[in-house]
Image (cartoon, rainbow, N blue to C red):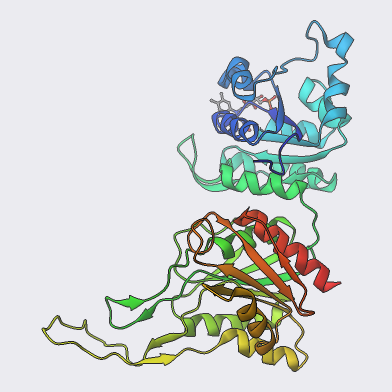
Length: 402
Ligand SMILES: Cc1cc2nc3c(=O)[nH]c(=O)nc-3n(C[C@H](O)[C@H](O)[C@H](O)COP(=O)(O)O)c2cc1C
């Protein structure tokens, strides 16, 4: 499947940190995603992993020195830089960061950085004392002033045995930074409040009723909105998915808690996307003790939960202006139901999910949705991954904001 990374020319600089083995995995992931990854290693980096290993992972020649036999004909230090769409330096040592901060050009990697015109992403990795040293901090600030993206390392156990900040970020975080570097930052000025997942409505301390929402669609929206520069507040019901990096997550359990969290954060949002599958009903009474097994049937009363979307639609009428997007999970009469909800809840956009299809709706990695906007314009999207689907929903939101 074609992705954002397909055919992208990525220059990948590897420097001499113990975390080189992790970067080797990134090279493999990027190559798998059909990016053309050309790796340049410092002399120190080749002490940790051989250039042969990296060449096997990238399927391309690896460059290690400025004065290789063909360097004169190729002018490698210029030609590689000229061709790149993105320049990644991972792991970036304290030494290489210092060199880049002062514009040194005494090896192929530092020379390429100077000759390069593409966006540069620097992923530091080092012992926490080295990372926290004033010299390293000042050097990283300089790199940011040059317009380079600096991705802060993680806290945790370090290879030297110390505990602290300095660990190279994991692939999931790196991937988001790389995709963000290729994405339009068209949500840079926006705060987007997204709800995701199911809600749990308890009968007793052991049992609840819920629905089959996995949270995948809402989490994909959060991930893609963050990639496109938004501040993202994600109000999530119980879900097994890891929150996307950089997203502010608020975990809730019941519909009432989701209602309270949404109302609390609504005023700071420019856009609200209600992708959660909120339970329409909850038990009238939640037992303090577990309901005991008995031979007889029992009646359980269900009472309606607050309609969060409708309440937000009413607020919108009172000129509280967040753009409002609802989701409808329908098993039949999709379009008619969507139109009805759009009107009744005063939405700007409704996304209609077909929950019956095998490759769409709850739990699936793909989705096929229809969009109806406030002018009743209908757009049927093809079968897409949930991230692609999120991107198209956000494209539509951009148009509605104009
Ligand atoms: C086992 C070992 C692990 C190292 N790990 C790191 C590291 O994680 N980060 C770092 O900044 N330097 C680390 N160093 C020191 C660098 O390799 C050294 O500063 C080197 O000069 C970096 O050169 P380069 O930036 O040109 O690759 C390590 C050295 C050794 C021997």
